[in-house]
Amino acid sequence: MNQTLLLVEDDRNLADGLLESLKEAGYNCLYADCATNVAALWPNADLVILDRQLPEGDSLSFLHTWLGLKHVPVILLTAMVSVSDKVIGLDSGAKDYLTKPFAEEELLARIRLHLRTGAPDMPMTNVVKVGEISIDLDSREVLLADACITLTRTEFELLVFLAKNAGRVFTRDELLDQVWGYNHYPTTRTVDTHILQLRQKLPGIEIETLRGVGYRMKSA
Image 1 (cartoon, helix red, strand yellow):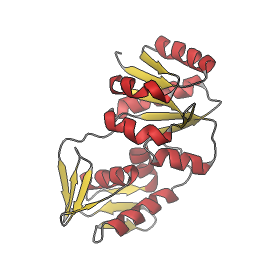
Image 2: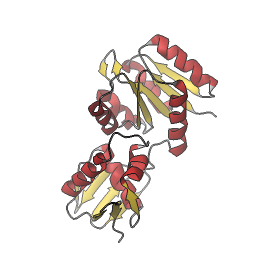
Image 3: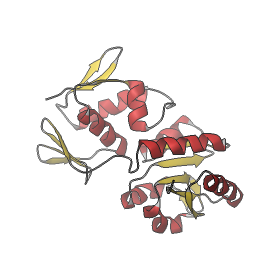
Image 4: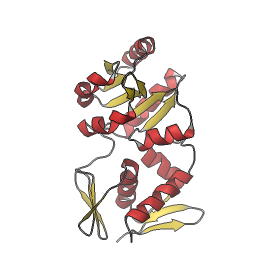
């Protein structure tokens, strides 16, 4: 298999059991019990399993920096179960969110899913243009009439996905699956919210709403 997973978990008993299961499943494993050593290990990982509550605090406060080292799928493991916690976690850069206690079989299935659908999370090798909007996939910069527009990670990935598939209609569930990364997001209303945010930040962007169906980026 030759794929490497990084587990960041301060509960050593939980970590020992997970590491054994991951190795039995054929993965190479790296381990950190705090945020201090993560940066050195992160570039060697194909996927990261990340506890939210570390000795140094909420791991989300470090996630943007770590993703800057290498853009890999991140599965959050946490006892924080509220919808708002899940939304914050996913919008902060994680690809998936699994609450404790969890079944190891489910975690392994999600690992297989995210490794299969891509690491790095989104290829960033060129520039995509939609009308006056220029999207640099390498630097993750979005330009509108030479002005740099700041987008969240999810807004950026939603924009890129729609732009790369201009002319095709996607339901909200399809967008959740393709952009957020799994099929059980709490509500499809988050898609509407992110589309609205893109329209506000990028005036004139041609994302059509098809009532009762979904959304489509108009092709040139």
